Image (cartoon, rainbow, N blue to C red):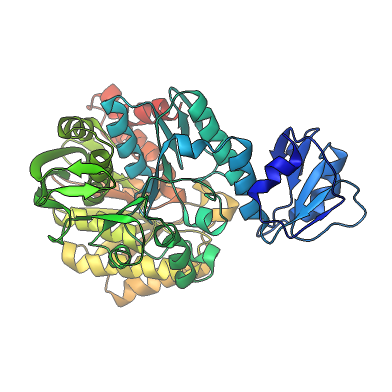
Length: 513
């Protein structure tokens, strides 16, 4: 492709060494530059691509996109105000504007992006659409899938994936949109059809420096949506509800608590942990040429948890907006068994073991809110303290646990630093333990603290009795909790069907293959 044809996609401030060159590819990583590439010098949090410009030219780059001209380089340099915006625009143009040829659905939330994206994909796929999926776990293009490196890929990789989807006759693509992707413009030049925002709680403050910054980026794709797009917003979440009048997009609202939503959840039963409810649409909806008639129908979820109700409501809204029948939506959600470590029931005989990533205060609220609606005797909470996340996150998590302790009637927590089960970047520091213990002490909650994850889990399992729930709660260190717990049960309960006992682990291996 001729360079000048390609840079028509950019707002160019100045071109240095202007001459005609042919562009055979794009790159932002100097290690991946090949002969004929246009190299985009991206400024990151830790690394500045301008420092690798000479290396990129040495490897074959025939032109550079820069924010500041690099001295003593003889290839053309195109100066722009923001190289990340430029990278997205260039990628979109280079790959032939692929998102204009797809139905693109962007899923945003602090909690539940992955589950909602997988639910949505299941509904669309069962309808007969050929689908794409991008997120924390996998990049799926039709029948092909590969593990993900990032929740939302860099813009160049993102548009390349979309081009592959077009080539494979994919029609509908669902993607998770992270706050960092919004801040770093990874979704730049993506032509979304439907954007969603389910919930916002305090998370990733370390990356965005403040909750206010996080909120600004997290809501930006809704606020910037245009009249040709549809926004699915959750009226039960104050931050999501506040956007109803602050977007040009056509808005469709969902609600579980709020009964003035366009799509409502009624008659909710969570007594078993797996929800049954009625979806009620009280008035005909006409949204950007789509007609959804007034109606009501029953949903039976295979995935447990109160959060699954919210995730499914978003997915139901998307499905209806994409022309999926109610029958297909019902069947899809009845069959969809969920995503690993999202209120995953891994054992349910005389007592239950539930595995949940318990990442932040919002996630903790939803998880323990589900337990409040379930029938059980006692809760054994085994919590992996979050490492290298700072005092603030651990204090807020502890305060949220303490708030629920009185509601759920538990007075002790088994906690672990998971020393042998975390990497250096997730190591639990003394100050993080100290703030957790302080909040628990002030709340009158006894803590049994273990250095190692297996010791903590074994303690909880030995205490478990008929109709109890053992909750494996936490990120990083607790990622290994299910495996540890089920292997310990093999020893503690040899009378159990061993093959059936380990089935959840086998499903995980198969799902990640």
